[in-house]
Image (cartoon, one colour):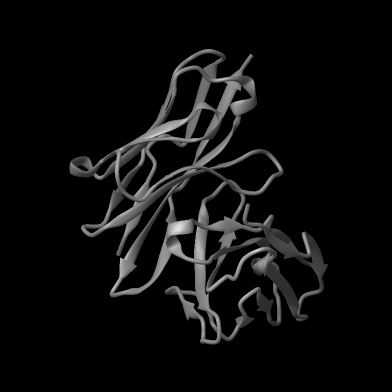
Length: 116
Length: 115
């Protein structure tokens, strides 16, 4: 069965620091990869997604992620974080199961706190 | 962009009663809808996948007789928590997709509290 792991459960950074959140998945087939953000009291919002093509994906609000197939990884990065980036970040993977509907499976989430 | 409306946003019910949560795709046809459950400070756990006009597919460990899912149209799916108990208190989130290539759109969630 596919699974998604996020190594950092809680990250604290100062404003302007660089961010990298790790995400690894376990599935040998073709996958679609996503990063979602959940701001306090709000619903999930899509940051970026990868389906095919350039493995370096650029998303909203200055975020980007790189798909490294050989490492089964899809790490999220931002060169300079802001206080408003304080939120919980979820990596998610969808994969085909015998031609059935793609299920979207989430990682455990990383809580990012940016200190002003 | 694609919008999914989930209602109600909050509900408090007595133990033993049933609660229905609606999930509507407002500007697209949701061929597939997903229902998730999120415990405090935890990730989203997939409960079931429903395709329009078909029976839902439940994840292992999810009681299908307790969590009834109906996906009768391309714009509406409902989750009914039957005979709710305090341990069913949680945050329930729906997600809809027209085609996987277009991604997944999430509802704003429903906070269920069973007293």
